[in-house]
Image (cartoon, rainbow, N blue to C red; front, side, top):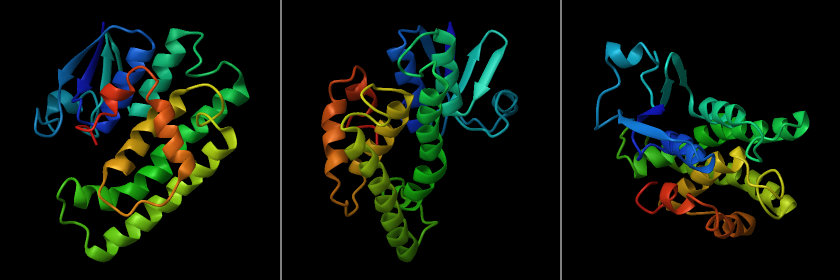
Length: 206
């Protein structure tokens, strides 16, 4: 059985758990993370030297980085619309997954960490700049969704939607001035019909 090391309140752990559910995989959650069990110990860092959750463990297999874990699980499962076999279609899914990790995550960090996690590392100017950047990045996603009229890469729900649905939910839940993004709002309503969305993007898990 797959073991996922992490906690359900972590946005990156929820990516992996939602992927497991969509693929109908059996897994168990081993509690690790801030406020649960400190990952900055030799036992955990032998698995992930970054001391971050999630970590996947299955026998001798150990993986970290949430988007990589999601891709691995989908590839391991075989034929699944979550990660198309066609090279170009797959690249488009992975393109938006990488964008989420490198561009969108960096944009939300100042505002989210200050307003939702109580961090004092960011002053008012940094928070305001972060909000502008966050809304600008969300505008890029809004344009993509307006083009597809459905999910991030087209008519089918994919791993790009797993990771970006969680990010969109975080944007909506953070008390900032939100840009008017009609395609994103329609996307959120569309996601309500996807199995697992209510559990992993619920109001108690920003």
